[in-house]
Structures are given as structure tokens and as C-alpha cells.
Length: 98
Image (cartoon, rainbow, N blue to C red; front, side, top):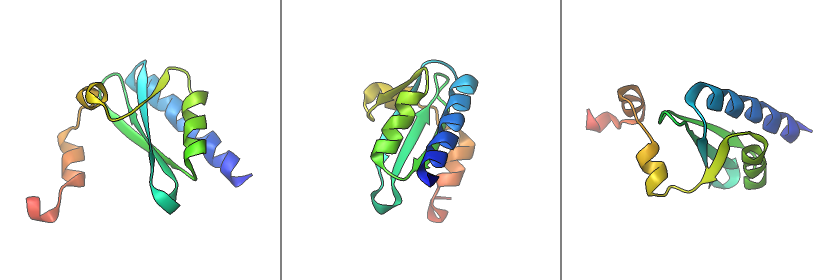
């Protein structure tokens, strides 16, 4: 039951992401071990977002449930479509890189 709520909330989040960042958007499902699965969203405008779900099956169900969200790998086209802005770079930067 709790997993159904998580998937339902993730579907709403991903649907909103697609509406805000363009169609089609891409989703890369990544197994992150005991923590579950991460779905990295890449909008048509290059924006990035993500959601974390309990397992890969739930993550793949999310992708299947959202219109105009296509599952991809981190291939050349997906990587090239991603636009990482300065705010994201600062957020992810190592304190030693500054």
C-alpha cells in the first residue's frame, strides 16, 4: 500500500515535470541498491529532475504510466540533451573544487 502511494506521487511529479519541461522527456532508471531506484528525468528543454522509488520495477512502472516520458540509458543523445546549469553545478560541487 505504501509503495502504491509512492508510485502515485512519483507519477504526479513526473507528469508535472513533462508538462513544465517539454515533450518528449527522457527517463533513465538507475538501481541504487538497498535505497531503491532513481529515475533521472531529462526534459525536452534539457532540465533535469529525479524521483526515488523503492525498486526498479516501480521505477519502470512510473515511466510506463507517464505519457510522453520515454525510457533511455545514459547514451550519447541523452547526455547531449541534458543542460546542467550553474546552480546545479554549485549544488553538486565538491568543497575542494571551489
